[in-house]
Structures are given as C-alpha cells and as structure tokens.
Image (cartoon, rainbow, N blue to C red; front, side, top):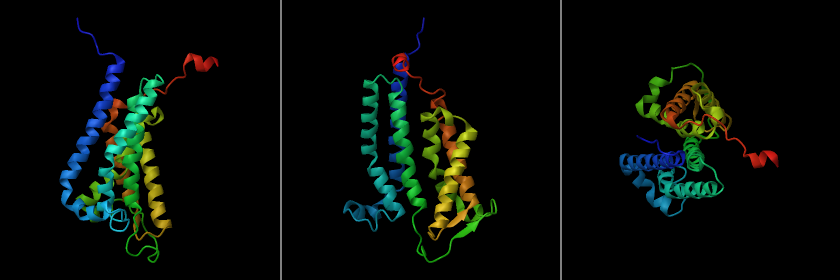
Length: 228
C-alpha cells in the first residue's frame, strides 16, 4: 500500500526544484553569453559604473554574479518563515526574491539611455505588428524575457494573480508603464505597442511554465490571531 509524501516534504522539494532551475538557467546563460560578458568583466570587477552598469553586457554579467547573494536571501527568508511555522516558506521566499531579482535588471536594460537621450524627441509606434519585422529573432526573444520573471513568480506568490488573464493584464500594464517612461524621459527609444504585446506574451508564457506551483488560495490567519 503506497503512501503519498507529506505536504512539508513536497513543499521542500518544490523549493529545491526552484533553486535548481534558477542555477541551471544562470549557467546556461553564462555559457551562451560568455564571450560578450567577458568584455564587460574588467570594468565591472573594477567597480566602475561606466562600461558596466550602463551596458547590457555589464548588467547581465553582474546579475549572474549576484545570484549566490540572491540564493542566500532566499535561504534566510525561508529559514525565518519556517521558524514562524509558515508551511510555504520556501515557495514564498523563492517567488519573492525571484520576482524582484529577475525583473529589476530587465527593466533597467529597457530604460538604458540611447546615444541621443535628452536630445532626440520621444518616438511612438502605435500600429500593431508593424515593428515585429524589424525586431528580428533576437529582439523578439529579448522582449519576451523582460517580464518573464514577473509572469513566472507572481502567480506563485499571489493567489490573486493565478490566472492567465490576470497575468496578461499585469504584463501589459507593467510594459505600458515602461514604454511611457521611455517616452517621457526621452531615452532615445521607440515606445512601441509591439513591445507591450511581446512583453505581455512573455509574461504569460512564463506564467504557464510555472502553473504547477501557482498559489490557489490566500493564507488564512491562525485561530490564535483571529481571537486576539
């Protein structure tokens, strides 16, 4: 007669799976982009802003280098929550850190000024699908990952976002804010409706990939807290 694994064991296994996927993804990115990242390494490791944090290669490099720190933050948060009796400590901790750590660098890249920033007036493209041809496979792939971490981890952390329409709305709203910031700050970038569509699609695809771990119910308060 077989017995299913206890909930605590399954949750711990889920946390290990999340961390393993993050590490494997980082290693894969490091292998694929190693030549480009090496060009920014001298500036980044010397602590210089110019040539590191104002370049795409430098931001990606430092994001990968900082993964062990992010892992320690996950471990610390999970340990504190488990001590407080939180049965979903690992899932919540991984989702929160992954959501922030995976989204902020990508948004930073989208808001990186172009050579004519502050001089060239803002440009807007509101015709759907017109810019997809000029993006190319690399541009489309880059836009798909901008909000991928948000779409992947948000429904794991928040039950209110655990549905495809809500992830789509979240991705489209956040992408629209990014495009508005590019226009308002005159960053020498084109604020395009196609960017919003592709970014939102990336969030949805990532959300579907994390569907087995979506949070379906909000945490209920303990009886002691309700009676206090």
